[in-house]
Image 1 (tube, rainbow, N blue to C red):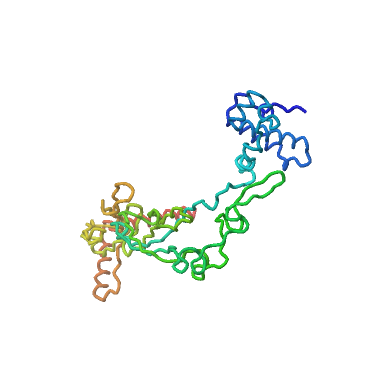
Image 2: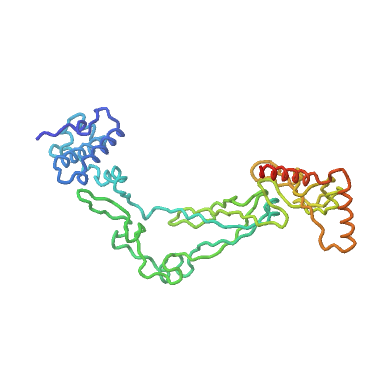
Length: 378
């Protein structure tokens, strides 16, 4: 039976590029794969035909011979070298390249693959003063170092690990799946090519033990809760020569005695005695840069907020300088003696005999209550 033209078998033109040929082969192989078409002889023949066509057309020399002499140029009985024979590509390599995404096959050499170390996180609690002004903190973080007992080999007494009997030291094995052979990482040694039958007691065969290291961390001014500082290469060490991971220092700002932070602004409550609130005056308030005097105008009501510009926080991102917002808390006198009570009562009576309203908020509130009750009765 005469063989079909290889280009026709893949459904491509004779001017098709290597990428087009590979794409066409992938499409045909997926469509006619024996696992997807059990007991279908026609599909199996088309799959073999596509495989043979791809083996020839994916090789530049064989493709040139085929283009010049046809099937005779690649027929082994006439001196040619078809795929799978001497001089041809190993089909397992083609299979691994094209069908790796279907079956999850992994290439060889897993024992030589380096693995990056894991990233670590360290929670660092700061005072508000340190967060606002910046500081340098010293932290101790867990790490892994080479086991001193086995010198990092993981073997008791510092000897060498045994060759894995499953993969014979290659790190990968071939698994037969029906018509094909798939190369994958050795399940016994995990791709290292070696196994430890007599592990070190100190490190339990890992070759590393836990330890702690001290690091100095520069905290920039203006950080806030939730900010992270990245220390490159200070995470877990890599495996098989891989690079270490990173350490992320997570900032947590502790609660403050006076201030509450709101982005770049600071808020604080300022207690003011009733006389100062009524007559006016000055009170001393703290800031992150020292003490300042806050002027309280006469008749200041409880809850009024005064803004001290530029007395907040300069954010770590950008040049914005926040403000300090001072909320007045008018204190009512307690523990009055007899004389003070009499004076306060006399003062209250004097307010009632004047035609001037000294309590505008109370008067307004009482008027609204009266109106509400009258409407409710209707």
